[in-house]
Amino acid sequence: GSIALGTVLVFFLCWISLCHLNYLLDFQPPVERHAVIEEADRIHHVKSPTTYKFSMTLDEESVYLSVPWTVYHKYNEGDTYTFYEYKGAFGEPFYLAKE
Image (tube, rainbow, N blue to C red):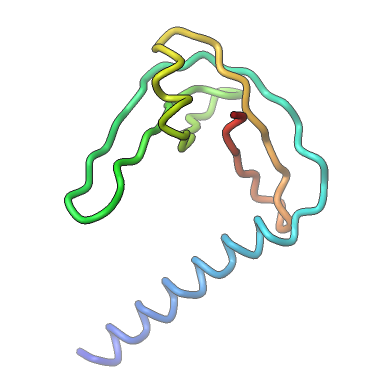
């Protein structure tokens, strides 16, 4: 019981740490990318801030990009959105909104 829970917790924390290190240790300049917004989602959380996301297809893969409130309200589904792609320190790409 508690050993399994501890193992899951350690695995989860390691995964989060690797994701953050992939971001923090990436010193390569970003590549500007463009994709059509297929879906714009507003996700309301009871005890935390509302999040805004765009769903797009990039190189035949689905990309979900968190965007600021101002960007969410500026673009509509079907619009082309420009954002940044980073290669990631461990080769796992990640994407950031261009404000």
